[in-house]
Length: 446
Ligand SMILES: Nc1nc2c(ncn2[C@@H]2O[C@H](COP(=O)(O)OP(=O)(O)O)[C@@H](O)[C@H]2O)c(=O)[nH]1
Ligand SMILES: [Mg+2]
Image (cartoon, helix red, strand yellow):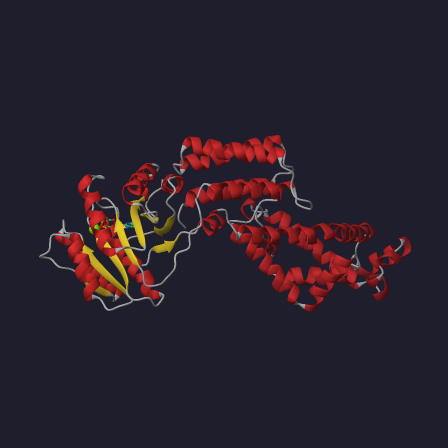
């Protein structure tokens, strides 16, 4: 994944929150410090990082979590929102025949990106014409021609022509109608008047739907200034950040370019033609923070509740009619989910903590004892646990070969499961609600 180490640090922060015994001042201070360190290591601007963590702290201490939400979930949500907030607006990108002008300095990845973008369109069934309008480097024309061959798209060049805008005009006349047209232009070593004038002449002829700046992510924060300057000179509709694979500074480039106001539309993630992806801030942050894990967990539970008995148990849980029989089928379905360690690894926060083998073994042994105790109960006792008084406890203990205190332990476990049930259910509902909101950048915070 792009920004591996930033994602890892941030997920570590969320795990700390999930694992901490309470959300208090000490935990908050630690969380704020960790986030700051993670952002700075990814080259995010110092002031931006400080402002972000200050907002996290202020919101966590002054805002009230919505009814039914835990402080933990609330804090995680605040962190999500604030990090999402520095990545700019969500901008749709239609895959229809349109005209695209690529601009940028030397070596930033323009020509490579022209090929990647062509592939991206063609894969979705939109035919593309690539135009070699880099009149300064003959090698760039060959490079683009090779890419066009690889992608299997139309290609136009005119090696005898020195004026980029004339080549573009010829290309438009040459291509069949309804192609997406992507124009690769020449770079310079810096933004100079020649470059801007050339881009403006090409633009007058092409009338592009998109003017995209191609920027190398290794520039880090300075990518923001570059985007700003190009934006002012030619007016950008978006930015493509390349070489996100090779740079630890990607976070700086992402946040700084977003701050310039030009939306980032795509990321280049390698030299290969398919190493190219859409950049969607909301989805990106969810992935970065590992929100996908939460989804996986919920899906696993959904699969489970398809099973009849588990479903009935869940219904009884919600209505407060949870019996020992329900608990027995619940424990049985837990067993079906596979080894306990696998189940644990699905829980955000617990997975990385690595529950030690001893604890796991002890838990599993206890579950086995619970099962044998329940097997010694009568149907009446399973359906109406409150009839189990002292004399029945001793009979059940003898029947199952367990100690009476273990039978009482089981009854205690049953009582607390029943109590926790309501909390669990509403918590799940809240999680879902959060998931829904996470999927929608424009959702208002409540
Ligand atoms: N690792 C990596 N290399 C890239 C990426 N995009 C482009 N490059 C490399 O960057 C170098 C310059 O690319 P090029 O397209 O010729 O840049 P241009 O001068 O702007 O047209 C080439 O060696 C490319 O293979 C990317 O996303 N990841
Ligand atoms: Mg080039």
